Length: 108
Image 1: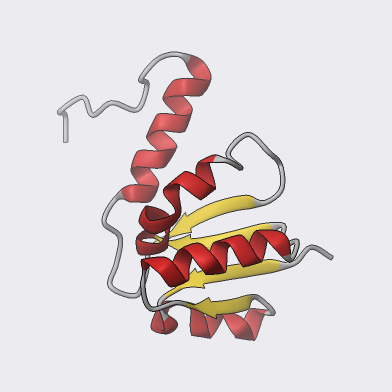
Image 2 (image 1 turned 60 degrees about the vertical axis):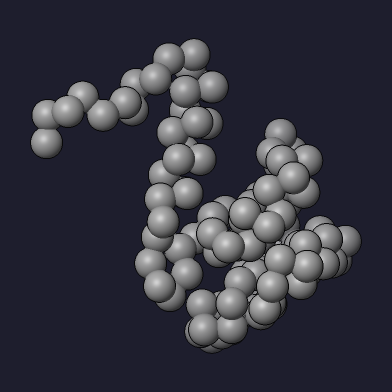
């Protein structure tokens, strides 16, 4: 079975332990970068990160974007989403198909 980790602030990650996910709490950007590097070294196949961790580790995460493992998935923290995950999906879809099909048409 593949190992799964969730890196983020303590309040966001702690509850995931009940699902067998390694909760890796971090307090700052340096801790986030160290935790992400350790999770990759330790062979985690799926790594969930909060938006704060994503911002701190964006360079490291980009190194693995075109690889199957680890799969890095961005999740909001307990305070809610700032829209980073939606932006990442938008960019990935646009790059994959060569057109911006997710652009807001202004018809809300």
